[in-house]
Amino acid sequence: MTDVLNDLFIFELANNHQGSTTHALRIIAAMGEIARRHGVRAGVKFQYRDLDSFVHPDFKARTDVPHIPRFMGTRLSADEFRGLVAAVHREGLISVCTPFDEASVSLAVEHGVQVLKVASCSADDWPLLECVAATGKPLVISTGGLSVREIDSLARFAANRRLAHALLHCIALYPTPNALLNLAFISRMSVRYPGVPVGYSGHEDPADTTVVQLAVARGAGILERHVGLAADGAPLNAYSLSPAQADAWVAAAVAARTAIGRSDVREITAAEQASLRSLKRGVYAARAVASGTLLTRDDVFFAMPCEPGQTTSGEFGRHRAVFTASRAYSAGEAIHEPWQPDLISFTRDIIHEAQGLLHEAGIVIGDEVEVELSHHFGLARFRDTGAIFITIVNRDYCKKLAVLLPGQTHPVHHHRVKEETFHLLWGDLVVTLDGRDVALKPGGTLLVAPGSTHAFSSVGGAIFEEISTRSLKSDSVYDDARIQRLDPMERKTILEQW
Image (cartoon, rainbow, N blue to C red; front, side, top):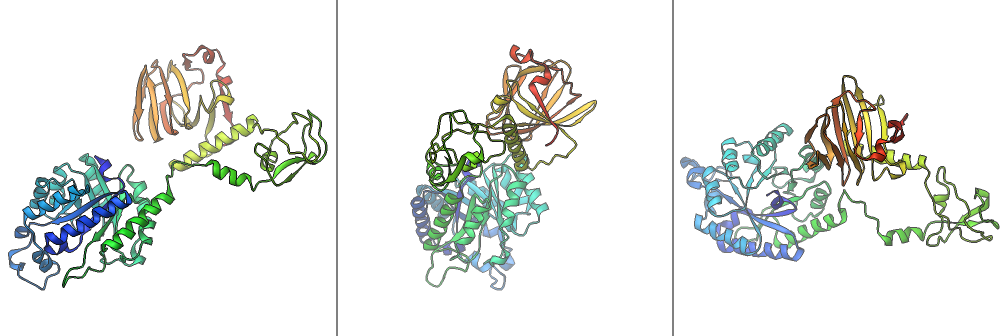
């Protein structure tokens, strides 16, 4: 059910659409058109208040108390709201409702509202929160005016009740000056509440489309704004978008999403590679070179252009790179010799990649560790079969970190003595335990008893703790006879420096 909350635009009807269903229907139709034009998932949000109980009887006729005259003057019946929810669904939009009291929660459920919203002013209204949670509906929570500790409490409240929920960064000032937006906090929320959609509910200048792009860049997946249409005697307020402004706001957000792309993908296109190659220097023979010559810097020169498949100056100058002429070259001829990394360069690249994964996961290891490359079919096949084990402590108890590179597999084996528990910290991990696949999510644990056969693999890379009894170098027994025949130290490389 969390899917309904991902990448969602929420249009909140400003000023309760002036208490007019005709006015509301015009706004809903306009938002439907915008959503279709830009191909986005969008919802229209209403505010429900049971005014008979929500406002104290002594204050209903008062005009000197903030908000109450507006609430009372824009009142709609339950049937009118029901019709508006149906209109939202006819437009192919998601219905969202902010109920401000328990009776309104029940009404929203009765009307078939798909998503409930907790406003910032209600985020510490625990009787209302309990009532909202009891519906089991997906929940969007605004966090305006809340401390980090209070947001922690709300997030745990929703998680403990297994509710699909999202958290919106919000500054509850209407309008909000840019100097107070604090959009950087969105990034912190994304890290602090993993797996929870995080968004932004804005009240900045309606003409400003930069803010929404910055919010998207900071990780906001849900975007919310007040929208409306000016009516006779009721101009739009200073923080609500007209349809034209809403269209520009959505267009800016979509453009930002397109430009930002995905953080988990480093896509390098053929066009980009060709563009860069056209600017690189190629390697050319400085003099006639005989076949079999070990090429030195004196034998070559670097110049543009660089032909397809030609050795580049960067490849030739790499640390420890060695090139031997596979044929004779005449002076000035382009050198076409592929670069082949040696084992030291290959190993160094593995270490750098593992360090990068640890940095991404926010895991810091100290200097007093032992690092082992486990390579069951040799270092050359390490990226397919193997793992990196970082031993942090190995006494009567042992703690290691295991790092699997993307696409890597560790083969089937068991331990005669050691009992271990795997605790996945980051990434994806499938453990095949006694022939049964167990997919772990971050935070998941799995006990591996002595004698239990197990293998593990990762698609996108994984880091997990191995917590065990003392680790013994000769305690692993492999099902594959080719591995088992090896001396334990033949399938391991111990690194003296990390």
